[in-house]
Image (cartoon, rainbow, N blue to C red):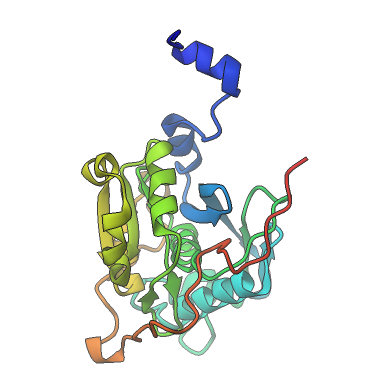
Length: 264
């Protein structure tokens, strides 16, 4: 049989589907961008989440053809950030004071690119939270890291589905670090041996652990921006929610969600 070179593979299969690692690093070079993972009928996908902060009235705008569950997940993430603004060093952001809610004079816009594809499920909760804190604190997200997990109002990180496909997608995209729920550790055994050896898997149970693992130090270019004062777990262990094994556990674009329409 004839062996194909990398160039020959491109001629047969078309250009690479995933962004190169350098492209990922470029897109993650500004605060407010984080990399999530999605389940699709044909396998996993890497998924960017972008957040922009602007002057406004405390509104949250969501775009990217998102389903109801995904929109609620983003709203829950913002509520957690508002509740713990002081611990995150964001209490006075947007001109607010101790007597005013956080972000009363700022609007946040969260966008999930690939707008022609419908998306749903709660597993982008950790990604949305990280992207929002990144934008508000001017701290970049590590360029080698993707993440998945549902976030509750108390900050607990709940397990999701499609872990095998998601981690393989991250590996295929050149990433070598994935943050995921602690309760998904049992799913690692399903990964190919090579993927297990190449990947650093960071297991978390609380969103504060996600932020500590995902965010870089404050950007020097924005040294006057507010820096989170503490990213230690904000709740006692007794306050963390336990996931119901028989309850609703979905991945973003999970099998239970509507199937995405093909991009034309």
